[in-house]
Amino acid sequence: MARINDETRRNNETAIRHVMERLLAGDVPSGGKCDIKTLATQAGVARTGFYPKKNRDGSPRPGPYQHLAEEFERRLAELRERGVVPDPRVEQIERLKEQVSGLKECLVARDAQIDDLTAFRQRALSQIAAQRMEIERLREALATPSNVRALVPTRGGKVPFGPCS
Image 1 (spheres, one colour):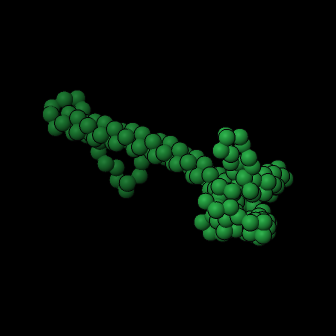
Image 2: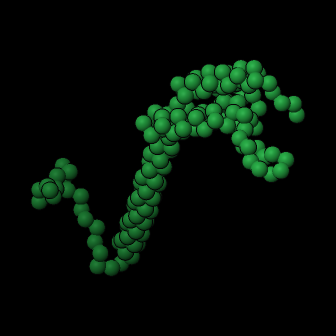
């Protein structure tokens, strides 16, 4: 891998700083995030330049743009501490999480209501079945000789004792 000269490094740093300002201002490209990967892609440099390297003897050395990555991360953290979210996707994710939470609560309430209505329906059907069985039992008792007598309908459809309210 070839080493870059000072002029190329300066040009790359200028491009990185320009992209950094855009990202921190909230101008995040579609499909990107406010992170080092997008910073490197938009600036046209290799992402590996933002991370430390090792010399042949194993000693660490900073990457050519590591100081810019640290500055980017520091400034991004400062923005987040102030409540500014430069990446609109993060804000959208939080809003959608709240919306999902609300919808889950609605589903729980709806399921409880469905359970209540199902139980009510079951009770109503049981009461109707019991009433039908009682009517059939009374009809059978009326049809066979016993002490059960049919009521005679009144004239004019009026109840002799007044309303039942």
